[in-house]
Amino acid sequence: MADDSDDVTFVGRLGGGFLSLAAQVGGVGVLAGQLLKRLFPPKLDGQELWRNLYKMGVQSLPIVGITALFTGAIMVIQAGVLIRRFGAEALLGWGAGFATLREVGPILIALMFSGRVGANNTAELGTMKVTEQLDALSTLAIDPLSYLVLPRVLAMIVTLFVLTIYGDVLALMGAAVTGEALLGVSTKTFANGFFESIKVWDLATGLIKSSLFGCAIALSSCYFGLGVTGGAPGVGRAVNASVVGSAVGVFVLDYFATYLLQ
Image 1: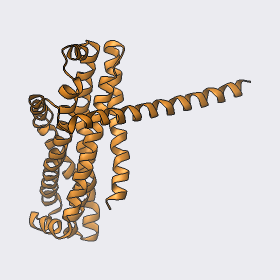
Image 2 (image 1 turned 180 degrees about the horizontal axis):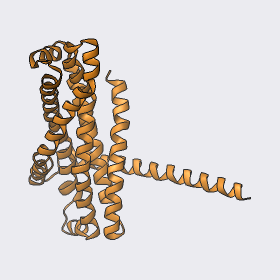
Image 3 (image 1 turned 90 degrees about the vertical axis):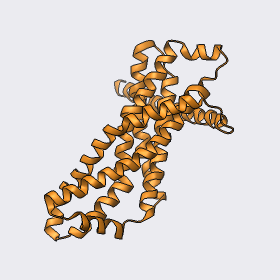
């Protein structure tokens, strides 16, 4: 009897988890549809859009820059053993460029962006929800999705796209400087290996991924923020769920994008 009870409990939990996941994915899809209706034709607050572009983009430059520089340096340190063993100094630029533009840059910057911007966005919207500020906007005949949510979603997509370009450049600079300092690979050799082997499509692939990641982070953070219940503890739970959901979305989208954009 005990074993049967444990089996039923396990199946029940598994089914409940699946239904919860399906509800969240469906909720994000519904939110995306509601925002698309307000985007064509555009129904959003321009000042709110510019404010979020500054807050999410400009204020993220320092942390993204530091992360990208050290990421480029770490890649060169890790590759240093093989570079020296096989005398493949000419391939350092290609290896660092290919990995940065296609995978490391978009994913790492997206995860940093999710932790800084996505979590903050969820907390802000969640606080507005539990303090009934969103209800107050509706009472004043102001659509919260047009006034608050749509500008934030657009700002996240645009800023993550731009931050990916910025981070890619700094990561390559960090790789080039570290390669010369630790491996004796001149910046000219690094640049030649990069420009001779890297194609425009490699950069385009990473930027397409960053746009998808930005959309996933924006929708996830807004969905969990708007769905907060239970006061301040609910805001904390929503932030946690938003970060986890965004990370999972980034890796799932990366898998399919990598397969389709080869």
